[in-house]
Length: 295
Image 1 (cartoon, one colour):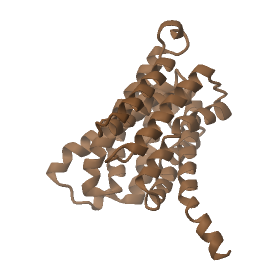
Image 2 (cartoon, rainbow, N blue to C red):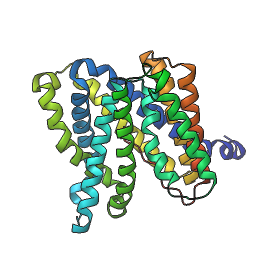
Image 3 (cartoon, helix red, strand yellow):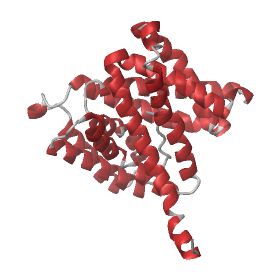
């Protein structure tokens, strides 16, 4: 390979890795949804968090860390928000299409990004988000288009995602990438027993289910986080955030491919409004908080 070709290919590599990571996360969500009829959203949440924690602890070995008293509250809040985000997101997936659930959930980190700036142009992005939500939410003539409970679950997951970002930055300042393993451990301590109580030991640990649950944990956690970490070290923060803004559309397309969840023209317009607001906010916000994902 010539030097010119290498120069043209290398900048595209982290972009490709990030797109692959997003596809992996949404593929994991699609696969998780196929398990809902068997063990339900609480069971999938608990089993995924348990398996993801085992994988992450094996990678990052958090027991080697020296924990400080002033980091306990950020770590606990981070872990609880991580688990609650996953739990609510999977409950939303039981009721509404994947692409719409991702778009509604994405309003959480989008709000964190927009509230970090107070310039007039931010009102444009806020207006686009409001327009997108008006197209999506079951209001007026659209009252029967989406399950309102599913919408509330997705918006609740978005709130938890915003809390996850804020406290993840504080907790991660002292422990780096190992913070993910600590947060996953905390969330597993809470939500694995909940899933186990609602599902039962025999069903949750059915040998026919475990391979699929392990695939969900790998696709939604270990594999994409590794790719995102590589991309983060090679991409400007603004480029990273802009590409992450495409995740709702990625979820919608994979929902069509794997789950046959076809959206209406109005719902596609709503997704477009939210994606454009996210790209615009990411491109113009200063300073811009880093958008992180575990769902």
